[in-house]
Amino acid sequence: AAGFSETTMSCNGVVFKDCSPTFCISRQGIINLNKSHSLFSFRRRNKFTKMAEHFEYNHIPAQLSSIQNFHVKSVLCYHESTVVLHLVRNMMTQFGVIDLETNKFLGVFGKKNVEFVNEALRGEISPDGTVCLIKIPSIKSDNNSAFVFQLFCLKKRELIREVTLPFHHSLFAFDPRFSSSRIAATSFLRGEDNSLSLVQLDSWSVLRTNPRVDDMHSSLNPHLKDIFFAKDGYLIFAIMVSSGAGCCCREKRARRMQPVDVCVYIFNADTTQTLHCIQYNRFICAIHSCPVNYLPIFSNCGSRMAIVLNDKETQYDHLQIYKLPTAGSLQNRCRIRILQQFQYPDIIQRLPLPTRLIQYLQFQPEFA
Image 1 (cartoon, rainbow, N blue to C red):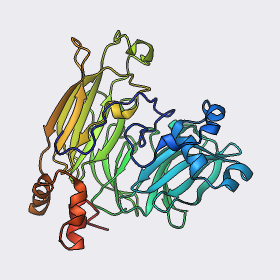
Image 2: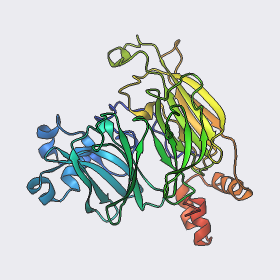
Image 3: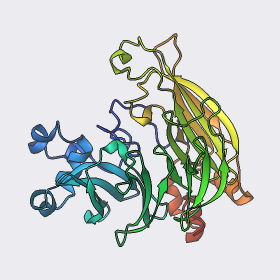
């Protein structure tokens, strides 16, 4: 569609097996999986996913994979050319950093803990690429369901700070307007299992909180699948998927299953106030489907959102495009209008404009 660079809205991959919440093998455009070494494919196919296999044989130094026995378990997250991998060595989880632009393995970080399953980890790199925030099970607590947020410096590969979470299903997202200092987090406050908070990372202090994110359930678990910001940072999106029917992968092809309910909640990113809720149905497995099948995509200017939905009468997918509320200053409104004039985002880099203005048009962080 005009104004949308991303057009992939379906994937047959299985989450935490073929894809991860932040890395889809069908949508991503940073690696070519066809270049994986076919020599090792038959031997590793049952043990590693396609993406893990690619990184292990193309980007991990030989001495790490063969001598030190490091293996890639999944792609935890990526931002531009920086990729953070979930590595396993001697049944212990660590993390590795790769710069795809220079094709260099930058090093390993994280304590040598027990090996964690991919489902237990969640990570995101800050908008300025300096830090990585990871949600990981706590090994200090006797409670098996205890989790912590750990903030790492990617340049030094050192732990900066951490905080214990009151709920194991807390999710987070970096505010793109701030370099690496602010996030939105769900269920971050003790006793508030249906909340959305704005958190300052240097002190873990809460700036704003919405105590009622989901109107249909008292807890966000297990319905909340993802939260993220709009490109300009003025809106927050929370994706809820009903999973009451459990796994329905076997019935998917025959369309004998009932469609799952998907809800997109939209919040003001400065006040956390609820603005809108969009509900629709999808013929997917709520437990194993790749998130691409229910996540919306956004136009280059960030003012429009596209979703794919189903109805019970036909087997066809339907595309709907929504115009999002325009927020922020006159400067942000002008940015939207400028970006709407160019079909391809790459043109922005070549405009005869000051560097700072080019960066603003490319949604780079405005504040420290």
